[in-house]
Image (cartoon, rainbow, N blue to C red; front, side):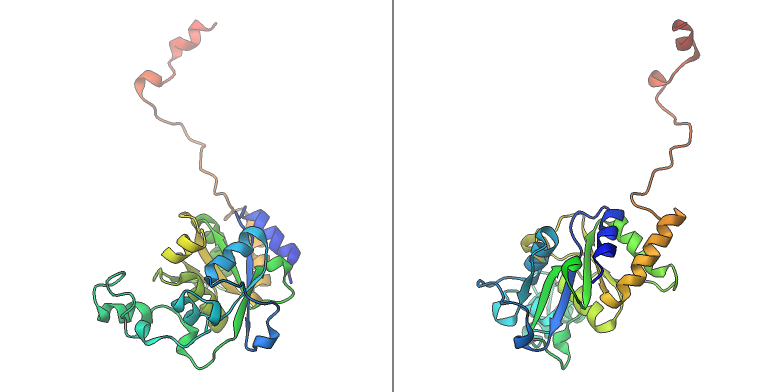
Length: 253
């Protein structure tokens, strides 16, 4: 799709893993391959794609994470989630709080359209995709946000629910055609190997070219680069015993 641009972004931002592309399929017959034989989670497939550049398919019959499957529209959102029962005692105090908690998770399974599967692969190896997913440190995600606001000024939405964050972010970008940054959930860290320092940035692929061009433009301006260099042009203050004194200079003459 954009192999040169993808590689340039990975190099510019010094990303630790590859950018991942995700494509939704309405028909099972159209899926490019069969899913893994054993049950698994979507975050595992994204991990495989971003670390090893290997492609995989996720379908409802191979899903372990039910809320992830609901987020990506593989199943209708189960009542145990919509009623707030599932997170109660784990993430929320009671069902009322749990209901609000789950309502804040973006789920395609709340709507009318379901999908037969989703395909995940390294974006630079894909001919077409719906959503791009980028993992990075907060300062790297900052650069992506700056790239989006550069020619529009419109803020990028952040998801702070920390529940099914990867699946929810992908679904949000796919449905709303807007980018989203999110804090990875516990499952992504446990099953996908996501690091403590990483955040998620998801965007519709039809915005990828614009983001890339703006990223290059802001890089050239020098106002927003990664890594952000510390300002070191000042006289530091140190403890008296470690501070250079004029008599020391005389001793070396």
